[in-house]
Image (cartoon, rainbow, N blue to C red; front, side, top):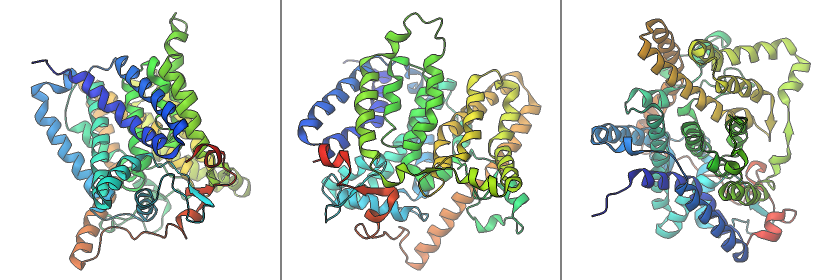
Length: 479
């Protein structure tokens, strides 16, 4: 009997997770004479990328790690269960639109267009496409359940990549994944007169009013559709800097996590140019078939679709405008925001990471993001920051490992205190979800957030739609 190559199986699952949404989109949205060659190119590139992936995962599948991996899978499943994904537990208000998006993807023909043909669904819908396809085949409720499966798989992949990077499987790194957050409690304590009652489990991350960097748990509970694919791709690129597949991998989240894609670009540029002078095969490594397909095929298809979103063209800088009106107040909030959300982390881990270029890229990206606004809300600040915050989390874990090896008790005490203060934010999110779920069930009320009208609301909101008549994608490429 042939022995299973677990590393190759693991790599295949990882790459399929990243690229299945765009393959479904191309097959379901494009005219057949476009979809067939584009799908063929993506599939060929996918197979080539998997064959050239150098990530070694045999360590994960040692017998000594199985019990820990199964335990981690249960913890991740519970985290996803209480997040509200799939409507199994209390859902935050953002699920109003997310539930409607999923229903539109299941009940409408693809591409999703309004009944009068004037508006099309234009949004980063990638996360929902596997579950929507499942829902079309097996029914709406089955697809809802598959959302949870898809989310658990993605987060488990992220956790496994953290383990591979550290060459060890344990639970404290999973605890950091779940509880990593900025020090929102300090911001609330300083700026809000009434302070915070932990028993109320309020959403505290808008303490800086104009800016927000979301904790991992907040991202999962509110914007899982962008966060999970971004975590997977960021983790893979950080763990294994394979230039032959790098641009191909990056292209996988342009469609699923558009703002995080932008936030990941500075890191990818660094990884591509790293050791440039010493690398004689630099251009040969970068200009691979899969990288070219990622940039010129997946990139162009994704951009043609997304550029039709009405809000995509509304780039402004409210924060800059505000600073002209009231410079002292805005600057003070900004400085406090930077200090509490990432500055204290950077200060504490600088002892171990200040010579790491990624440390300074994180700093630069997180300093810049608050000043850019796209669309009608502060989504760019909150979502383009996801990769930088996630890499910061990796650097914190790395610094803790170094401190443990050197038995640096002072550092470990300091970073533990910082992490515990930050953990108040995810604790609030988890607390609220569990409390409200039990309360709703006791009252016989559905935990699933009520949907809005697909025709009267979803297709009329600029953030989620655009005109089909003036849109190149819908006019020339969509079915």
